[in-house]
Length: 208
Image (cartoon, rainbow, N blue to C red; front, top):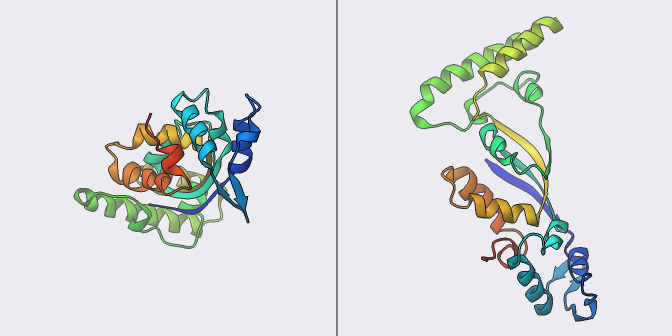
C-alpha cells in the first residue's frame, strides 16, 4: 500500500475567491513566490474562521486540488468510493490480473498471516488461470477464464488508481477515518498522507 506522485494546486485562486463575498481583497496578505504560495496571517485567520463555520462557508477548500497515485486493496477502494464527488482512473483488473506476462504473486495482495495457506492456494489458482488465458486465442475461452478469475479474486487485491480530489473532501474523509479500525489502511497510510500535504495542519486537520 502506497501513495505517490502527489500534486497540489489552486491555493492562489482559492484564497482570492475566498474574499469575493465581502469584496475584501485589499485585506489579503498571501504571496506567491516562484510557484510557492505562502498564506498570510490575515488570510489564514479568515480561512480558519470559515472552515470552523461549516462546509457551506468554506467553499474555497473545494478549489484546492490534489491528485495522487494510490495503490490500495479493493476493499479499501469500496469504502473510499463513498466519497463520490472525487474522480478516479483505475488500472484495469483484466490487464493486471490475466492479460499480462507477469506471474501473479502474493505481494499483489494485502493478506493476513493467519490466512496465508488459503492465499497461497488462491494465488496458485489465479496464476493457473492467467497462464491458461495467455495460452489460448479463443475469445470465448478467455472470457470464461476472466469471469472465473474475477469471481475468485480476493478483496485484498491491490489496485492502483489516480485520484483527483480537493481539500474539502480530504477534510471530510480525515475526520471520519482518522480513528478507523482499518488502521494500517486508513490511519497509517491515507490519513498520514493527508497530514503531509501543504498547510494540512492549518486547513485540513484543523479542529472545530
